[in-house]
Length: 289
Image: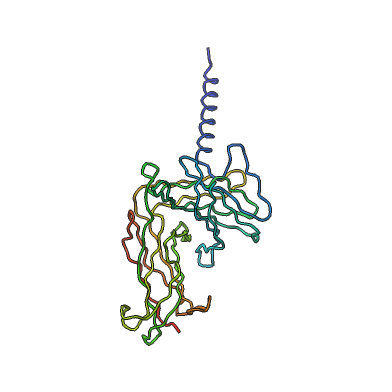
């Protein structure tokens, strides 16, 4: 006869096995065989994969970011995943980086757009292993296109005189603790535009149209651990996702000298529902020189 104590020990062992299995299944950045070997050379490397199939995702956009004084993650470097899903950043300075990845790929005529996954707190000489991405509307309906966010920018001097300026545009996605992440935008986006005076512009302004293509899914996240990063994969389904569109103004042709006061403008939160933006994020720069 099996004693009560023996049954309790069996139940406890089963609970431990089940819990450990769930932990592995929920993980990202680790390998089933153990810790990923560091790449050396002050590099950060990894492989972008489909969360459900574990197949590599080629052509994924990966941004290496660090927060500024305003708690906004700014892009330090970017790259694209290779055909086997691999990516690398090399010869990095010491510090802590956030790795943001998303993708929109077309295979055999079908487009699959993946929501972004961020891995926080990655030091140089780190191997992320597999970085999982989920289709923006879930694995049950993977075929989808990016969200199109179109709008207009105007610029003028203090007295309402048209002024041509260069504008760099960024799509920001909010995160807890008042933090915002820069989300890599997809092919077809006009991330840099120049305003030009024309009869089609509002009176006294120069203007330009822009469009950004972004994923419409919720952000998944994990915090790096050399013994195996655990990711919290967001539930993906058609839902509202809130972006902020930021523009920074520069003297036209200067290659980086700030212009306008203030130099940056942010549109009202752009709520993405399905493939459409519910707010048109127009930006207006004044006091430009």
